[in-house]
Image: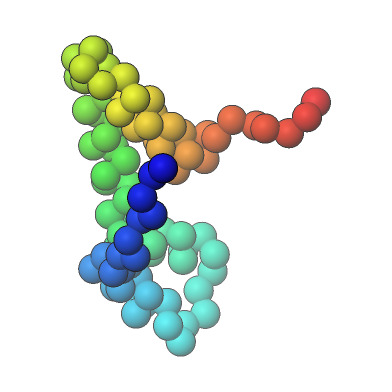
Length: 87
């Protein structure tokens, strides 16, 4: 059985984004851009994508599950999750 993840404190970037959002009426697009910028998620995704592109084969030979999880996370956060609806 997998242990339950412990609750985590918000990141500094998430707190910055929350402070910027509080009490403001922002357009959805500008809000998303603010969250991307302040959370650093976009940069982390780009770094992870680069690592997989450059060293994916080496990592996969030792831990195929790790590479599969990284690729799935990239797809999910880039909005490329597979369509699970029935055709």
